[in-house]
Image (cartoon, rainbow, N blue to C red; front, side, top):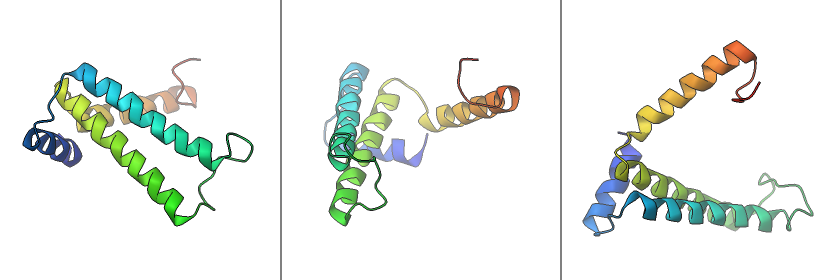
Amino acid sequence: MSDWQELATKFAQKHNLIHTPGVYVLDLVSEVGEVAKELLLQSDYGAEAMTFEAADAATRQRLAGELGDVVYSLCLLASAAGIDLNAAFHTTLQKYEERWLQKGHMNSHD
């Protein structure tokens, strides 16, 4: 289990925030939506390129906060589902590496 997953789970337990995986899925989707909202705002709803290189510190801080929320929600979902997120991540990297070597890309479709 990753340090992040363990820290998130302990925090949730300490504050009586343990729920079923379904609750965490909804929370995760909600948090990813907030990341998308930050990207939309930064790009003036698609009128400008989606880039954060020129973003001000407050915008970067908002995005960092939203990404932190995503990580927290993902960690709790994994714990609630009995998944070691660290192991799952390493398995995914290996899968992508094998696809790259076999196909020259990481897509699951040929």
